[in-house]
Length: 463
RNA sequence: GGGCGAGUACCCAAGUGGACAACGGGGGCAGACUGUAAAUCUGCUGGCAUAGCCUUCGGGGGUUCGAAUCCCUCCUCGCCCA
Image: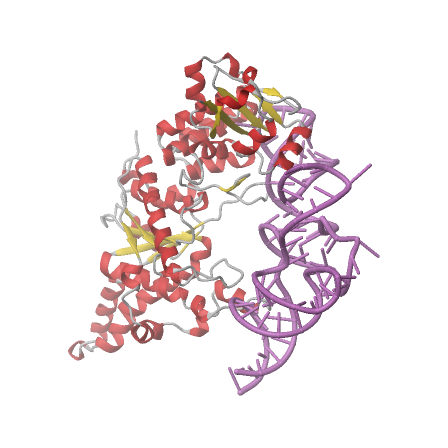
């Protein structure tokens, strides 16, 4: 029986997928999200920092969480930090950072924006609402912020937050008032969304705990404490009346938060790094082919967890894949499933298929056996460069091609690879002593270079 | 505003006038073994026309035969005082 929104328990689902780290008032949140109570859909938001013009697979964790929110019949809301990004979140940072320019933040917001919709589409869902907190934070004056918001924050509490405390203790660090104030802005975000859009739940990375709690505190102070002390109508000032009012206010001020864990690797290495650096969610920075390869290279010790976290396969499917994988780990069925699912989710089925084809052809080593069309299809996704065909007459040094394809970043490095026996031409080891000539062409127009086991590139000889 | 200290390659970090393209660690890449895994061992890790040359130690300027090292100035960060 396919799971319908009404049958998915969001918290259970997130917990099983390794997407739940901590939450505030677990029982209350479970009740709040329960469809049985007739509560209807709840709005859950997560913010994203525009610190770069793309997001990485680390950011995919909260995005997946929002996907599950939608699948469980609730309403995800994406908030881009066009305002908060101007200030800089100290959470998880060990030192003060340089401010990013306004234009830079604006550019990054613009560049990140399409990512959310495409992951949701990949999951078969509609694009969620995407807001920019500059739209409301940008309108708050400094005086208003200090009077109406700042008054609800205790510096004594603020300096207890991990993000601030760590910076106050370190002798070589310190924190500016700018970054110190960050949590106020994020709290204001939550309060604003709560009041104007009925957003009642915030999620974020585990380093966001303090910011999330600040938001919940602020909502409570604005919606319960403030009315109780200042706006209570005199005519209702009986003890019984107070209780009724307080209960009603608290019901309206219900706000929850939870965090998603930091994804780790069993070997202790940083998750989300490949030989080219971070793995990004935009094809300009990380091609679908590289994206597929990243997941395919997942270690056995991690692949089960990643299947749960980064694909939408259900429990039965994951258990089945893992059982078969453990029976024959050398077939790497789990890695293949993970790579296909994750790539299709982010880049679509077509891109995933070509990444699969490319990998199959490029790693089999039997390139010359393929006919021209099959080869073209296979390498469509691999990085390629064009080279003038005329050069072949005189022969082209292999070193130059390694440089041109980016397989080596310098001639020195290219020589190093050649000396180590790391380079293959059309699947055959090559020491670089002889230049590349027309004899090294596949189907009279292509040469496939391979560096080490994993890195490949195609040279197209053009007139 | 005043005083003190720091800024070295992807990260941490040594180096305080020549022996420095710069110790060490981490990370990364490659080789061997494997399964495009993990672990382990080995090599490499600024560039080039490679027994040589060029560019690098926050930016700029200066002293010197010679500077990452000394001086001036600017920028950034930290600590302390006001």
